Length: 446
Image (cartoon, rainbow, N blue to C red; front, side):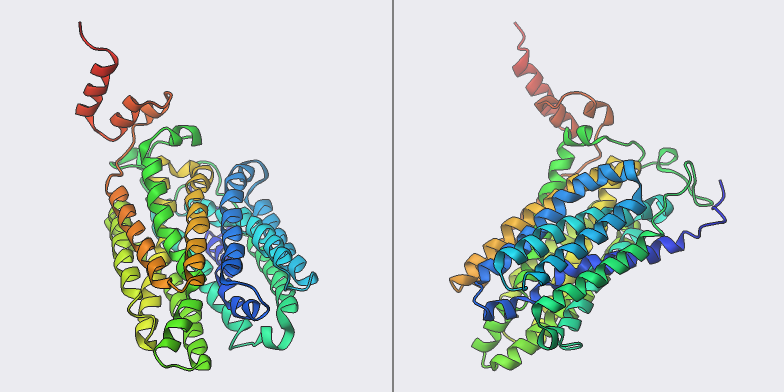
């Protein structure tokens, strides 16, 4: 079937970027934390709001993936934009300073809005570009990373919105901007006609490799591959999320300990997050997506998580010097961005591209788990003056994730249609000898 004349699939990319630029607001949270600390907030409280947002984001995605099938991607994206904007509006109208108002408005309601819209451009993009899943996913989510830079700089050094308008008005202005941008982007979130394929594309069912069979959510949960992916994603995403939450607080502390003034350390740390981390975060989504198309998802995930562990360990020695801080922030940001190109496409390859809209939100709960555990851990250790220990712990978690990724193999769809069992898990891991041992234990010969 040829490409529809009335719709150019390149508009999907434009719409996806507009949506994701707005959703990247969650990564701009660090620009507000210094002002909130001046109002008496603790480091832990700033990280709790961030973690609430991440958890709400991840949980809402599960329901959004299913709702998208019923209501369609355009309505789902638009609803997410309205919800996100409403959350920021509520926080602003209630003064922008009260912990519970901000936690509920920006953390919970805003997080739900992000989760409602986030999966839409990923699922739609893969359907229009099945031949370049890594590249299109990377492009679709690149705006999420680049958006953080813009929102941080507008609130800070570019627009001085926090200083000129105050927190409350900045929250309300951002809420309005997010809503308008997402509503515009949602107009291009259309699925291709059933059976449509790009010219010259050979579907996975007609060639060697994974991705040909579509697993339901229940079937996916019966495979060990899901849990290995979940462990890897939790470690890798959680480490990056903690880094985002602390990318200004920790370097400011380390830079001042190295002799920089408070003003200098604030400017340097702000640049590290708003420019180096954010740009690399967006770029990493595109580059890792393209690399995975060439070298494979599993290999790319292993390299990404292993190198991230090294960068996180090294960051504890880099945060106190400006140029080293910039390099460290860029490296961590680049790998962090790769998560959001690699894990959706890995999910599509292993459990089926047609079900990625329903399956990936469940996988994405790992992002929420990492976002709850690791930022709060970092904030708690920061309150007792031990940021380096926090970075060392999450680096170790990335090494665990690397090991889990190395064990990921193609699952057996037929086995996944049966109830979960140790026998089935062993078979899915291609551990035939262990399967025989389990069978002998269950049914010993006389």
